[in-house]
Image (tube, rainbow, N blue to C red; front, top):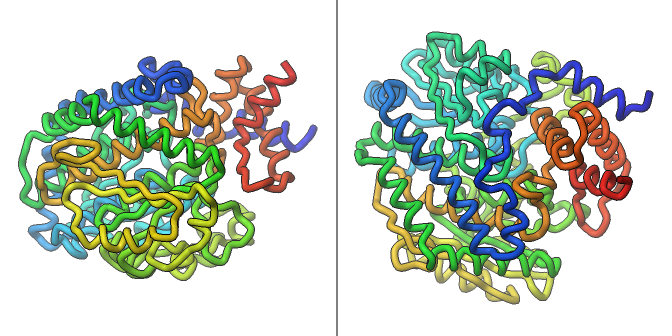
Length: 542
């Protein structure tokens, strides 16, 4: 039996807790079926199709805001702040970046060290999720232990699917240390409990308060960086604002924001931007996004494009072999170390675990024999500050793009003008009243409406661009990476759906491609997706 068949059978027979097709967040949304074909014909029609799913968030939010669990969350966060306790948000991947964003926003609002966050893999994972870390509950436990949570503190564990092992680990560790624990998920509790054992244990634990944020499938099947994380930002951000003194009808205000973004001028502006990006990328050129006050929001969307659509990830300054990223971010106002401090509102928190620590946590041999280097020095190699980087403007069609809201100060304009002078082309994406993408952005304690608006706009643009570039089939991520067990399952289901195979055979075909690509050098900077390679091979052979 070959290695691919053996690995596939192992996954099919022994990893059933990672077979997640029954979860709504992993399913195909009926509103966006045929998205790729629609957007190829009409960019504006495709954007409107994507936006229809954002409306599901409003319905779910109204239900959650009226619940006892939400009231308890808001009260607990306020009590912790008033009594000298700490608030900690934990997450992985998109929810890890959200957790850091919530911490940073709270610090900007004056909360200081009273608010912290846990990102699976540490702050380094802001740039690039660390392969297979999310599969280990022990890793989450260790990070929560190092955060020194205890009595009087509140942990809000955020997991889109409700099944992420590392995030569940943070919940158990905090609970055992005496902290109050909330568990936010975008799948119904009864579905999770029926299909995922590790989730069932959390759901049945009466000391953990569950927040059911479920709104149905995502606009792109499994792309929880979209509606799932939007609902989490809205709901948990609202609770945080209320703890800091904010008060308004958050569901109605969110609905108003969606109406603004759905108006023809806003859709037209996003469509023009999508077509600009598509033109840049198809010509093998690159976009560099510049920002300041909302750089973390821009950073989040940009870095998440790599695993979602198999685009080249951010590259370190001493890396001369990896392909140039199609998209990157920079702050033209300050150096890389200072940019990280400004984005985070503190010094970066990075992991420095060694072989012994990984062995204690039960890590696989390939991890403890070659521990990933995730420290601060490595993080600073991603030159996101104002250092000159000729690689970003080395091609004739490279573009410098400034992304701002109407509240951004004039200092960014001057710094951007200087930093972008060497770029062949420049563009500005502005969001807010009387801006290119026009919408109302009321002031609030953590600038929640600016964060939500930038997220919605950039999610729409990046997804629509990938769809026009052929990296989406119908409403499935045909180029998704398979860097952990959840993504292997998602890739298997995608192959099964689009190639007409049963789950076991699709898993085998996917593992054949994974084995093939592991032995294939990257050619001309092109990162190949095992899913896309599998579908193309099956199409040709069929």
